[in-house]
Structures are given as structure tokens and as C-alpha cells.
Figure 1 (spheres, rainbow, N blue to C red):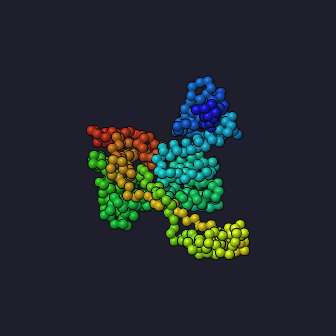
Figure 2 (cartoon, rainbow, N blue to C red):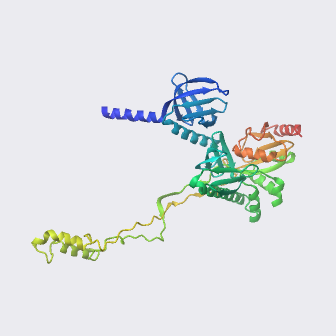
Figure 3 (cartoon, rainbow, N blue to C red):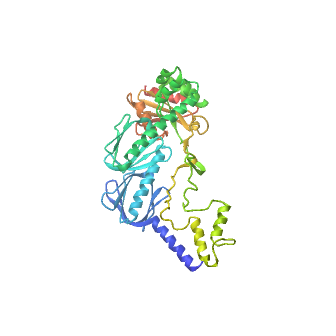
Length: 471
């Protein structure tokens, strides 16, 4: 490498490093607001976390999942509050401020979507909800609202009508206040239409899955079952049996692992059982093909845009006639002195000369491109509850005396989770919280974890003891 090339490479490397991080002033504050540390530090977004590298001291890596809020308490100052209450105040960021805020927003959004188990790619909108700026993300199965204080997931299974009025989108949600989104500008109608479409698509997937699982059931009965068994919603066995006798038992038989059927039968004897299904993976397939698809009904205009001044027929005969007029071998009517004019008259005869009066302007052909040869679609046949990695999770919730039991039917989940949930709406509350958490067997906001019972020998006795103590 030459000296000039080496200097150029060094300059490009320095530019790249400058674009990745920048020195800022920082303060680390306790939950009470007391200053713990301050100084200068390099600030960088890398590998799903915020890296704070003080000029004197150890590096502080902050995963996006540990950030509870990002605010600007005063101009050109960014306050990052962590889950444990500590906070990092950044100032004098310069041009990095806008980039930092954008990368924190995107990183926190991706992290929240992964934690909530949102499916597919997001359509992102910038809006105001709850009186503050927020990022609104529309996934295949849920609406995700990410504000300064955190993220909120709204499953399409619990979404009602979507209304638009005065540039405001109101999303009705079962069991809670509606989500009101404003300051969307020209994208107001786009958000409302997208939400309506995604809700419809989710219902189509549910109907397709149940239709393939219960292929012998009458279509009207499948429709009624799909109306209840929306994605992630557990339905009491009595309601399912009201659609068709022993429908709940049939679903359990079809969707439960053989090794788990005794456990479900035991839960059915000891609790009020509800059955549900939750889609785990996206079945949307991208467009494919190597050439754009075109509307063949639109006839191409090839040959209609040439100049109208031509005087000769197309083909070899016209070419020979033009050569004669141009003064070539065998030409007639032009002597030696007309050689300079022969080429001009030849071009005029072919229509390339100046003809302002008869020239017709060319018009642009319409663009009839419609994407690739195979458009994007959904592979509904991939919605199955069977196999080692099923696309649909089958689960059961059992309610008894202030407790709700969560059991996975078609995966070898190691434990059965039992949550405390009082009242008639306890099962629905746990169901909503599990859906928001991506159906992970862990503590959920709706209730405390009363216990986890491992599968294996002694499972039935431990479950009986846990449920009996609360009876």
C-alpha cells in the first residue's frame, strides 16, 4: 500500500470511528437524585446496548432491556433511567444526540418486541399517545406502543373496532381503556387501515388453523369456535362443548403430547379448564422471483415512438433507397458536387432531419410493474400444533379458588406454573398478562407466582397439595 493510500485508509477509519461514538459529558445519579459520578465519556451504541466509556474509569454497558425510560428534561440533555432506579444524564452530545435518540428508540423497540413475542416485521409510526410522544409499531399479531416510560403491547385478539375522527385513531380494547393515537398527520388513515387489515388477517389465520385441525367439523361450528378461540385467548371447556359436544376434549386430544395427557386430565378434574392456542412464528412469505411481473393486458408501444418524417419502407429495400439518396455507389440524381448534401438528404429521408411542424412528442409509457413474479403471501398450511417446533402453542388455564394454573400442551415444558388471581376475572387477567409476556412461564404482572411444579414423578401429588391448600 502506498503512502497516499495508507493516509486515505487512516482518514476513512477515523471518520468511521467518529461516526460510531463521540465524547459527551455524563453524570450518574442514584434513585434519590444524588450524583454518584461525573466526567467525560465516549458514548456508543453497539451490539444491542449503550456503551458508556469514561475517560477515567471502567466501561458501563447498559442493555436496552435494562432501560426503563429515555427523556429530555431540558434542551440538549438526555436522561436515561434504568430499571433499578439509577439514571445516566448525558449532555454536550453535539451531532450525536439525534442519532443516539434514534438508535435508543429503535433498540428499545426491537427489545420490547422480542420480549413480547411480536410476530413479523413492524410498520413504524411516530405519534402522540397518552399525552406524550411515542413510537407506534404494528406487527402481525399486536400493536406495540413505545413511550419514554416503557412499552405497551395490545394483542389483536383483544382489539375491537378501529375508528378515525379528526386525525385521531381510537382503538377499542377489551377489558381496558381504548388506545388513542394522535399527531399522525397524513398517516392517520394509513394506521387505521393497517390495523383493520392486520386484525382481519389474524382472524383468518385462526380460522384456517382450526379448520385444518378440526377438518371433520361443520364449517359453521368451526366459525363459531374461531370466534372464541382467537389467537392467545383461552376459552372455558363448557363454552367449547356448547358449540359441539366434546369439542374441548377433541382439541385436547389432538393438540396435547401423549406424555402430557394424564396431567391435563388431572387438571380437568381439579380445576375449571380453559383451552387456548397462540401463534408462535410468522407464516408470511416474502415475494420471490427474478423478474418483475407486468400486466400483459397493457400492450407495449414499441415502434410507435419513432419520428413521423421517414419516407422509406422498413427493411433492406428502405436501407438501399436511403443509401442511393445519400450519394453512395449507384446513386442517381446527384453528381460529384452534391456529396456533402447527400448525407443530409439521406438523414432527412429517414426522418432524422428538422421537422418541427410534423414532429410528435414522445409520451412516457405507463409503469405497470406489480412486484416480483410471486407476491408476498401467508402459508396457512404451516399453522400446525404438531411436531418438535410447532408454529402454534397449545395451552390450558385452570382456575380454582384464587389460583390459575398455566400448562403447555404440545411442548415439553419442564414446569407447571400456578399464579394467584382472585375473583371471577382472575383467569382472564392471567390470560392477558401471559399474552403480553409472550406466554413465557415466569412471573407476570397480573398476579404473583404461587409455585412451579416440575413434571415427572410426584407431579400429581404436588399439584394436589398446592391446589388443596388453597381450596
